[in-house]
Image 1: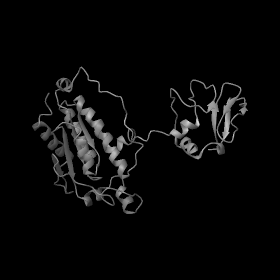
Image 2 (image 1 turned 135 degrees about the horizontal axis):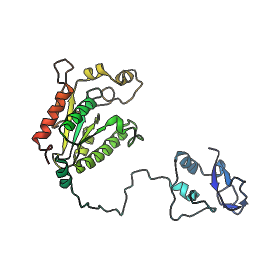
Image 3 (image 1 turned 90 degrees about the horizontal axis):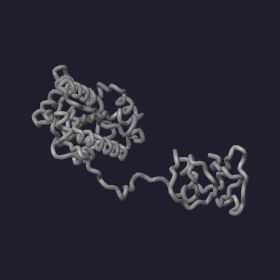
Length: 293
């Protein structure tokens, strides 16, 4: 980045950035932009600009560059640049919860079902997505409304800013848990299908819902079976050292301790089909009253 451009509608711009002369006036070129040399901008400010995708207008600032800006461009100052962006760790203040006149029981009565989260966890290649699809279809055939949050699909949108580092995986699970909670509150049977390797993260999602509304389903499939399937070729890449932190290879998977449903698959022909596994989950939901209004 060679410099910073400021849009000006007046013939001159006063700028107190060091190196430009605190009292000097410079006439912008005909295109209406004044180019400031990068050397005149503090290093931390240059880094902030380089890492920022956008700036947002604010109501009042200590302006160090006096310019009449168009409505589409917020004023930029050294003060603003040094403030940086919210790192996501600060919590919003002065917010209140607004209650709706339509409650969860009303929506469940309308749908003739009870909202819950079916959380399918297991190694890559264990069949999570396949069972999730079979479960969604089987419930649809029974007239029940579901929505599936697939781990890969969510990373195309909501979680596209996250990697597979441990802390990002935790944030990935947290976001999906919050979205799943909203679906359950609507009265939908939300099916979350993702590796979710860490027990503490799954337990954190469980704590978001009322007791009984988080149905943890463990795809109990041996690693060698999952690796023999390797539908995405990820195990091969991990074994070759081309993928780091891959669950089951060089990153741990913590199996559930007290989950609601365990689906075993040994890899032989006598093991249950995805449809049979889905029916096992449906039997649990039926017994717990989730398929009734």
